[in-house]
Image (cartoon, rainbow, N blue to C red; front, side, top):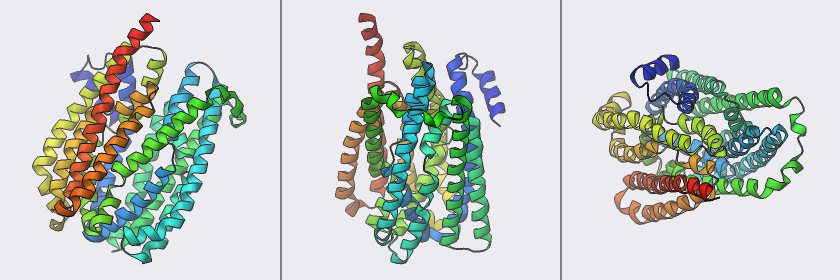
Length: 454
């Protein structure tokens, strides 16, 4: 599938692929997209069966259970994949494998601490989640049980970052496909046996655990292959000179992640808390359909980040600008036609594929597509800033966007309903991504001048 798509690009856009960096990014993202595409098809059928089986209200409860765990987990997370890519990649590029291994070791230890903290918080807060988001206190136990997946994710972020650095995108793709396949099979069994909410929760849990453990095993094997069996003995004191930089990066990405949780990654919980499970079910489906827009684009940041980090370390500014420009063109080539398709046929898709009682989803879908299209075109905004050594800037911008979004929710939701969530999320994306992209362009204009003066 990927090889066919790559050959078509070469045939119709030969100049687009004339740059080695672009070819590498397309190749690596292609591995992920092949899996993402297969997984998306499976996820689509997962969602259809779950929605048809459960109905809007219980589908909203499912969203509350799964989003609650991911929210708490990411609250305690330091986005270690980004730190690993930034610093392990830096030391690998400079021929310092001992420090590269020490960074991975430090990241893994910190992530383990965060995962254990997340598990404790989930168990303590599960009754609150069941009461306020699912509106059913009897589900507290299942909030806890589903929350146990964070223990399988002890070092999955660090593992993901390491696999990116070592160009193991094909491995990541296979793991993603296997995870989705297991979930689909279990949901299909539940669907045809007329199972309920618990059967669907178990299906999602099983896929998540398989994916997390597989990533961890793959990363540890690659660490041993590249750094030797004793890589884990790399002394943390070798990072003493970089301690402040590492901590600043980790804390900044954690704060940015926390802001993202409040501003955009916990949308279903916000809707459930304000308007109840039925409205949350509508919004969960609107988000799921909007995510179809991100299918081939979502792997691009992972594939682009290591390349940008390397080129910026080499001060190859022309290459950096070229990658960003071509990346935006490639994303727009998919995003704009797909958005138009979903706007034109979205109502028919919802009524036919799901159920007519899900039709209130359509207006939210149209609104969300605006913000998602903008994000897609400038998909590189965050990884470019991280590569440029600007981890704090997106945090500040996201915080300002979050404050505006929350104010809009409290002021407007009581009067205008759940569509306010769609408007506020689209506006948040346009505001934060627009400012971040502008900062990248400004830095790329001034850095070469500073280097020239120096």
